[in-house]
Length: 186
Image 1 (cartoon, rainbow, N blue to C red):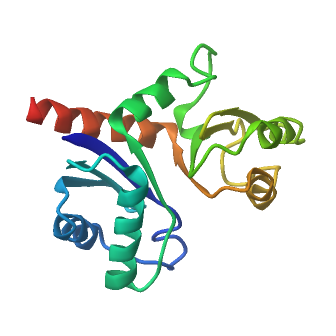
Image 2 (image 1 turned 135 degrees about the vertical axis):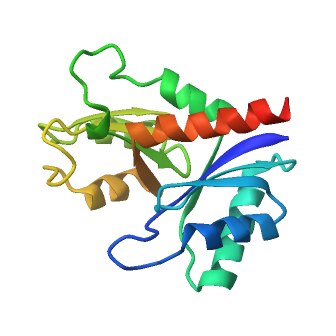
């Protein structure tokens, strides 16, 4: 069985698209996913499944949320091995003084392509630092995430693919949960 990390976009933000995590776990169980574990209130679910087609899984989860909660969030999935790769590819890993709470990984629904990546890297974003690798956008916010200098709407329009962000602490915690599920099956 594969362990999959599911991240919902714009859930429980500003009083909109509310889902209680126990209800979300129950939904995932009803969709025949095994051992769903949630992390924080922003729609992170780690689960086991025999299904290998992530596109099919995404649609199944979206339909279930629409049916049960009345809205359709973007659902971004990564396998545990993909999440390990995201962590291994962190372009800020070797740099001293990087605060994990100020490092955001935006998980993109698809690879935006070479042209979009190049345009993104030419975007004036100082003091924020943007690095993109495949379907992940790493952003370091030296002054914190509260008031970024660049427009996220502009970034998303440029990339032409939706995404959802998680800070570095959440990314590593999600992998920890995934690895516990992997170990439990072994």
